[in-house]
Length: 445
Image (cartoon, rainbow, N blue to C red; front, side, top):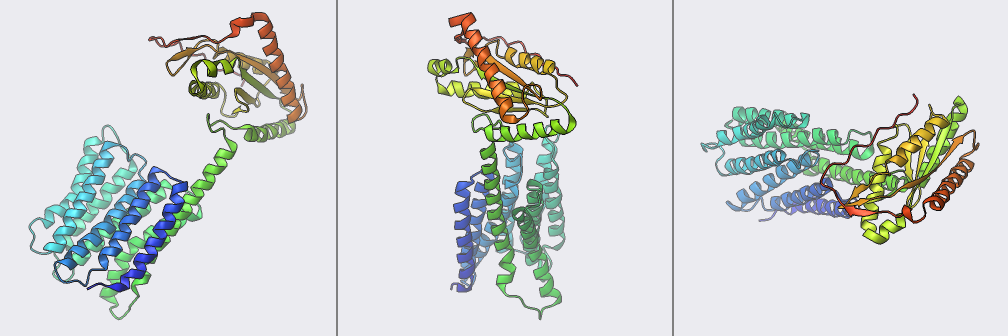
């Protein structure tokens, strides 16, 4: 026999899973991949429940597959939100929980009252995560891990007390297991997305409502047996969570698009658009306070020769390395941007004088005086710099950029005239000894 009344739920979850997969393809991450796997297991759960009316042992098998798939999906949702899930100990905890669920649900379905292994299996829910956590505690500690330990230790205690209840012990045990899993999902998702967006709030509330189903449903059946709700009502939290997760993916995609629109894809530094916005903001603040703002344009010398000699791949790594060096030598209130192929722009805000700007410029160019180790090559590449100070050299952003650009090219032309062909970069094998660290930036406070 087949319970065709579950078919609409299966179709609805399948539709949402397909929609989720379509969005996930454009906003793919390790977390979204686990979500998609979880929703595939939810579909498996509904598919198995179609065969609950079948005669034994097929109904028992369908019940086992349905409950295990539902609980396993919840564990995957929970684990997806763990920031340290790549650690071996986290993977061991995941395997221990999934394995214990498979064992315990099997024991409940096969022999819910007389099985001697039921109590030891209940103990494993809390004992295994606790043991792994204690063993790894000297090397790693995280509040989410202790949350898992507390949840599943509490589940173990509840199961040991109520799982052999003569009237409804099996249902109490299964509901407690599912309540624990989906309450953990709500807590983990709140930790992973502590933001007040529609997607995050809907998903957190949906997981909490999903967990509450396994408390409210049995309570109504016990204390208000005449009160009846259709099965579709109890399945609503699943759909709420699915919609919330789709919204989260869309929100993440929007944030990524905003980031890419304002940052250089190669170095991760602000691009010209964000640089212009920050420069305008810095000048507005300087006008109000009567302070100075320095703009520096730094252009790498003969960067084309680097690409031609060792390849564009090494050239890209060189640009990223230079961006990291410059960012590490200025204050957090300052801005380092990549505004051209081999051109970097630096905005220095107050407190800042021309003498400070010159000192900072010498510090940045000195970073490139020594060979830079990039992909097995020591690359000697210098830089030309142009400095303009607001309001002494210009009164608006465009004029300030023009002044700095002219000084940068004047310095570049003078350097070429003085040293001629010696400005070519030199490539040597990477030395085995460590290079002396560069001096830090010292600016006026």
